[in-house]
Image 1 (cartoon, rainbow, N blue to C red):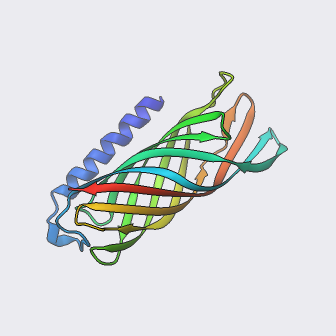
Image 2: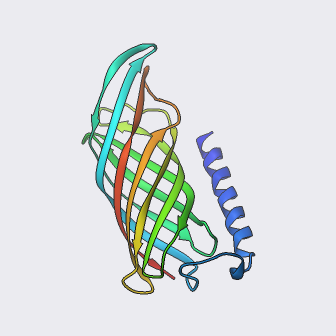
Image 3: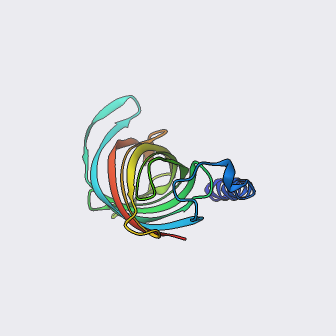
Length: 193
């Protein structure tokens, strides 16, 4: 089931990119009109995530969750908004691993060298993997935030991002429901071509 949803999401993204590619460049205002795509490597520089656990209607409490991570993002720059697709590898509290994918839209403003932006993403996680072989169900979530693209050259950029992330529903882990939400900041370096 999860692979069918992932496959459907990829097909929809390709269809959307294809329809945007057939639209004339003059139809959209573009801060960087000569570039088609960008590729970015990024790492998590800041997190203020909280987790809340419960069994049925019994609240087990909430607490801070420390997270680290890295990932990659590609963006289709010829449309406005930009279409973004990405992947993150994350580690929560030093012993819980997660592979997550996302798709979204980014609205850029400003000049060719300094571009603030707003973005929204839908996230999909392949479950949480604990060190003692416990795994959760896959989960869906969202994020919304903004950032700043700094362009020291026409092709090289630095991406500073801050976003609020949340799961749509609690993550099921052997009878315990876990909700994760909070702020995540990333720093990325990328190339546009």
